[in-house]
Image 1 (spheres, rainbow, N blue to C red):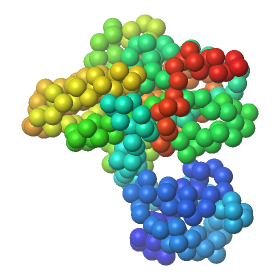
Image 2 (tube, helix red, strand yellow):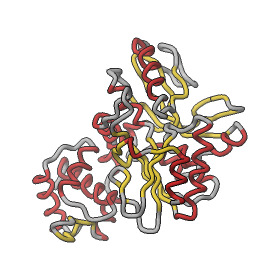
Image 3 (spheres, rainbow, N blue to C red):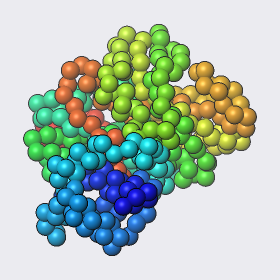
Length: 334
């Protein structure tokens, strides 16, 4: 297999690795679509059989599907990173296109991030999320709660853990586009806050030049200081940069107001047409938009020492499942 076939095979192995459990051709086809690769399940099965023959995957059962072998996991980890460039950008665009949240009714699906903690740390996690939410540094004011074996988006909560779903910032792309305003995600980065004032972006990773979610990279590398911002007014948070046509700036502000009425926020700044925002140049005819990272909600808890495992862009989740933090505490107590 060479060229395109190699890239598809690598993407299939990536999909199985991210699933973390046996998956069939239908599920893999859906995962590939989120990477910008459209294949019918029948075609996916052909690739899976070849991977079986190469010793990279193994069929657990016809009902449950396949998993990677040890050799397959190693091959996936060593795959040429260049083959995966743009996958995150494609996943972002695909999820934003497929989500169904209606900003007028407050109903439909949003894009979720999934975080898992041991039950003994659940209340602490909620308390840390509340601090970030009250400072306006999160995207949503609501969370989804899931028990072991249940799912958040397309991710299953592991045994012995409780899952917490938070609203991903890419949800705003879907909301804005759903109202007829084009929006382009340029990069994710670290935003310096000093004395409660936004100062500048310190680090930036372009979505189309990355194989990973940039904000997830920064949190995992312990480069955020969200808790310092919350408690002292100065630190570093996750944020992303978008552009919208300058002609749509007024409509964008109206859309943001509607979203806030349903506890979805996160827009930190809207620049003037063709003017740089926090040092980031913007082309003429466009406005720069700075959006808080959805991972800020749990980054503070991680900085406080809470053991949290997170999966960004975990998939689409019905917004009706999201509850207030107060309701989430009661659910846990019950």
